[in-house]
Length: 249
Image (cartoon, rainbow, N blue to C red; front, side, top):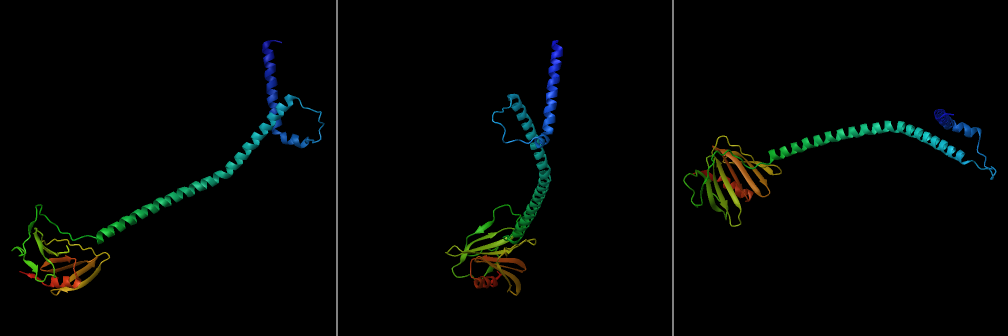
């Protein structure tokens, strides 16, 4: 037999061997059912090594096939659940983002409300230079309005004049301050911190006035030809009395 024919015969034998192994792997359950294992085999009987080797290959092939089938079945069961979980996760994330966005808008609104409610007195001041000041007890000639009554212990500390306002500062020995302002501009934007404050309407020179008390600070605002404000750390009654005493010089 030539070398070519010998190689052909070996190839055919390997193909038949593989075919038999494949057929046995496919019908191993039927074979086991038809030829059950007998427990009381004669101890002297022994299988040849080739048989053991082939049987191990058949069993391993069968186990791999069963394992693949189980994996496929579990995958089919798990995938729909995973898809549902993914959809729920995406939906939850969308809801979370929407909630965060709503929370952010709400927080911004709260901040804006706080800013609108809490603002100190503001006026437009076009004077870019330094204000004129005086520390004299006698008020300068340009101060046209001043209080005739000053609470006990307070005295004039300094005065200030800008293009939009005239200010008199009163201070006592404890460092408490009362500030009287006359606003000169016609486009004054005066804002008062009334958030959490005790606010009431009173009369100053028979004109409606707004009184606000917060954290020991009294603020009184009214109009009488001009816009006036009196702000200080003093008793409410004393502040009202001081405001009512303000007159034109």
